[in-house]
Image (cartoon, rainbow, N blue to C red; front, side, top):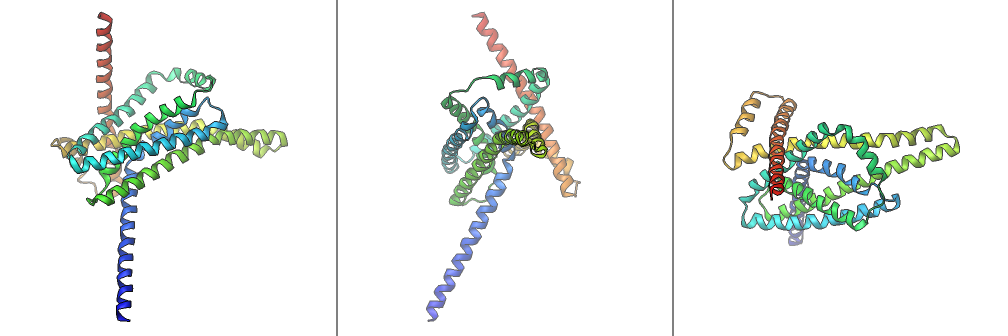
Amino acid sequence: MSSFFAFLDDIAVLAKAAAATVDDIAAGAAKAASKSAAVVIDDAAVTPQYVQGISPSRELPIIWSIAKRSLVNKAIIIVAIMALSAVVPWIFPWALIAGGCYLVFEGAEKIIHRVHHSKDKLAEAEKLLERSAKDEKTVITSAGTTDFVLSVEIMLISVDALETDIWWMRLIMLIVVGLAMTLLVYGAVAVLVKIDDIGKWLAETGSKTANKVLGALGTGLVKLMPKVFMLLTIVGVAAMLWVGGHLLIVNLANIGVPIFYDIVHNITAAITNGVLLWCVDTAISALFGLVIGIVIVGIITLVKKVLEGFRETK
């Protein structure tokens, strides 16, 4: 009988250990996911553009197809990350620097484009709304390519945030992050692209039944959605500059260029308030990201002009 109770005690110990492991995985995955918020917001803001001009009845099936493509993308990326971490783990700071450059470039380019092409914004939107239905395979392929780039960013940022060196726990955490991010992004996109349809339905129902409340609610939703997408874009750009700048500062220090990290540390060393510390650190990272992003945009623009001039002379 004593051996039986000892057996039960062993089971209880194993159960506690398993529960603690699950908690560790959940906590690690949550922390890793939070670090990739910038790319997630940008992904949620970009994806609805692919279903504009498509019949409302086909929007959700196309989003589902893109989501399935996203899961395949993340599976490929996770396999590559785990293989690289086993063979050439030193590559990750360099990969994160490249990812940070991409993020700050995207953020800076969007700001520059907004400043220089703000007058053309309405004309572009009207043209977009007037275009005919696209070939669904082309839409899914194009969206899948964009998703692959964004998924690489999400998973690289996530792996950088993982604090465990245990191989199988890192794998499970990355799988959890990949599934959670896909559900979050494409679930949000599915809701966002249908809200205006719901608004139209409510407005029409209110008009037919002379229900002013329904009519006003429906009209309000239709008018609100462009502002929601604009807000998502603004938040996404700000987050890209912040996260991209932070990745550059930290990982440049990891490869032996600590000057920027030291500057941030010296500025924030005297701050004791946690909220203020986060705000100052975030602002510095975003400003650094904006400066580097503008430099990268300038370099790429210059290279394009040189290449165009070279082609014209041939």
